[in-house]
Image 1 (tube, protein in one colour):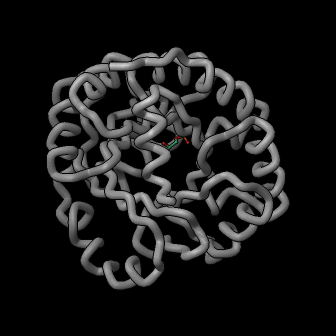
Image 2 (cartoon, rainbow, N blue to C red):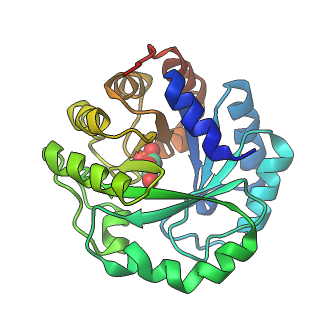
Length: 250
Ligand code: 1GP
């Protein structure tokens, strides 16, 4: 059974999901087990794994340890083509559609195509949109692209629409890990009004209330990384908020 089906079915039902982002560079083996247990207890829906850099060479080990500690699907969220592990359940195949860097739209995909195919991973084409989060984030620096200005809801909407029409199966709106400003609800709502594929929202979300409001605005999946690294009790709080978000049936 394909993992994408779970995204699509949950979207169709208006069920909101919570994904915890684990950066392989920032966790210890013991920390991973602890996180996985907390995610299970909180009924987290997905674990995203990746980072802009991934300095550690232990991605496979990291995935295997998560898989050994819980049954939550592990989805790779790669910052570069080297971040592929056959042990994961799926790969977000990212195209940075907010930018105009051809390398991140198609170049790196060409270079890594054979390796990605060989991994046997479920590949989920994902239109990745970087939104300005008020401070320079690693993602805007590394990707060498301009983020979409945070108040340009129409640019975000048209970018997401174009992405969907080009065949992206998910839209990921991200203000970058550790962003000062999370994405506005008005921008999420504008994008959600025109896009039918599931919408993932992340970057700078620090509390349950913002996660809830994003869901209400139209986000289907909420991703939190940084805030959880600082305080793991947020896992349960945010999961509860996301899962209690009202059904939004279009
Ligand atoms: C970053 O969307 C993720 O790519 C999550 O961001 O670490 O700020 O929660 P945070």
